[in-house]
Amino acid sequence: MPLSDQFRTALVTGAASGLGAAFVAMLRSEGVEVWGTSRTRDRVPDSTGFHGLVLELAEPASIEAAWGEAERASGGIDLLVNNAGAGVFAPFAAMSDAEWDGQMRILLHGPAMLARRAWRAMHARGRGCIVNVTSLAAEFPIPYLCAYDAAKAGLAACTAGLALEGAGSPVRVIDFRPGDYRTNFNNAMRAAPPGGEGAADAVAARVWRRLEGLLHDAPEPARAAADLRTALRRGCRGVVRSGSFFQARLAPFLQRFASQGMSGRVQRRYFDLS
Ligand SMILES: NC(=O)c1ccc[n+]([C@@H]2O[C@H](COP(=O)([O-])OP(=O)(O)OC[C@H]3O[C@@H](n4cnc5c(N)ncnc54)[C@H](OP(=O)(O)O)[C@@H]3O)[C@@H](O)[C@H]2O)c1
Image 1: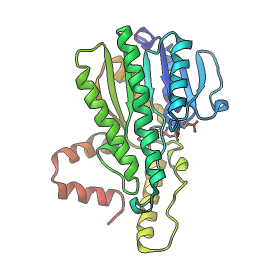
Image 2: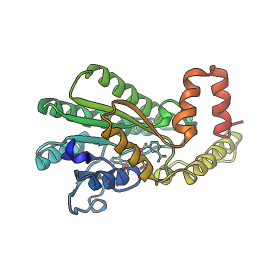
Image 3: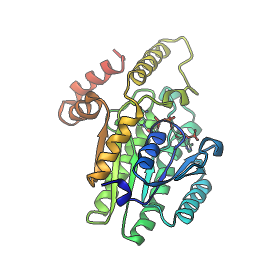
């Protein structure tokens, strides 16, 4: 059964690149009419079954406007894929308060604002699905990305709470938790790369190289889109992990069942910290 049997319309944030573009392609191939966002209108040109919208997650007025426009133009969004996001790579102590707040705004407050609007509208119609794209970082944190880790863990906790509130509801909630995928994500966060020459910077530079290597060797975003398609077709709710065997299975397993000492050692080795 194509997904269009469940979802006539979808809103995908961050639709111009990476995972968002792959989600759009997958949904279009399933016959779903898609509204997709970018901060730059030219990056999401209209095409058959696809409608571009401007969205800046750091600005509540932009979120309100994009959601309102998507609802009005579509006659009701059946599926929200809360995907857009970007990280800031920096030592915790070196981050400015504004950078920290910005991470919370675009990765937690903005997506929650959209999800709240979608939840109300979908409930009123008695159907729908909200997919919050979190990250493996929500349970297997990445060094030098503390704000990102915190915001993604916050969005995951929010999604879990909402799933409990909505148990038995016709509106489904999914925490889609990718491991590494080969996208523009690291390039987008080069804004604050390690720069100095001290010992701490040398460690940060090693971790950065490790993150670059992981992304370079990671699967293509189409695989994440295929995993999302499977989850939506099966009517899944709750956490859906997607990625390599280590990232989607072993790392979460370790975090749950290994001792803190053991999982700390694995994390330090994994990120080249020791
Ligand atoms: N790639 C991975 O390995 C990975 C792993 C786990 C989780 N994720 C998550 O997957 C999602 C998609 O990331 P990606 O890997 O596909 O990276 P990407 O290619 O850089 O895509 C991120 C998208 O988010 C949009 N965006 C960034 N900042 C925004 C803002 N302030 N307001 C509105 N939109 C904004 C960008 O849109 P415009 O530039 O067009 O405005 C861009 O299209 C993110 O939430 C990320 O945290 C990625």
